[in-house]
Length: 100
Image (cartoon, rainbow, N blue to C red; front, top):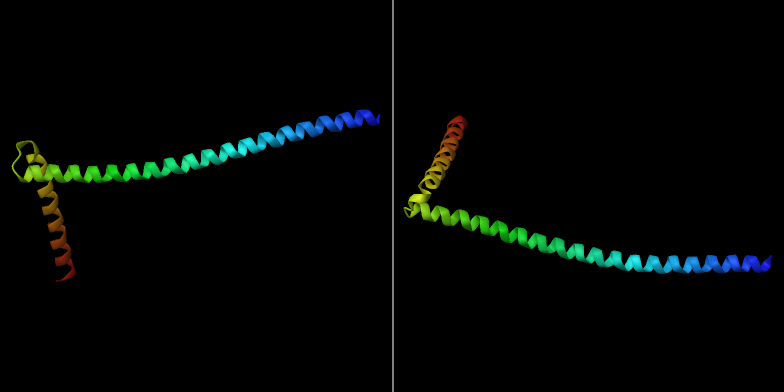
């Protein structure tokens, strides 16, 4: 009976050691995945910022092209001027409503 208990204990001990080994391996993998995730988040943020800069530069280039008389961008220039005029009209209206 004692021998059987010792065998059971030995088997249980081996299982525990295996589980501990797997746990350590999984913990290391988790840590590596977390590091990779953080790196990818940083890369994504940098690329998003670069994209935003390029979008703004593209808008500016189209506007400059329209100002310089490029026929392709005349509509863009007209729309931009219309937006500015509307904004000025709103400002004038607010000034009149405020009594200035």
